[in-house]
Image (tube, rainbow, N blue to C red; front, top):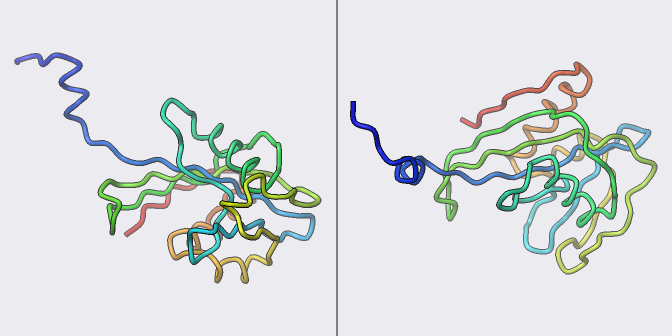
Length: 155
């Protein structure tokens, strides 16, 4: 067997993008969504994990930036995988963490990025989310209820 230099071997491995978000609800079970200025659809508070950043830390950072909520995110609710599509030439791995239950959302820390935010009943929220995020919502709510994470590969 021929051994390859570890640096070369790591360079040869496939790469992918990573994003992380938080499922936050209010006391009535409504789901917190944000509407970015650069998207047509709503989303969970979240975004791309930065180089060297742990996914749960990214989810907490994005929650603070997008919804003005300073909170530690809790348990992992689901991991989702999506194949490359459109302008995204690499696969995307998405982590959705439990952001807990809050009384109210704060104000978006960056109003140039977030146009609106609010709490919506799960059925309404599912209709506001993009297709990939919409299918995450019932799975994440079930994972929260059942106390175990879900792997949700996109087909």
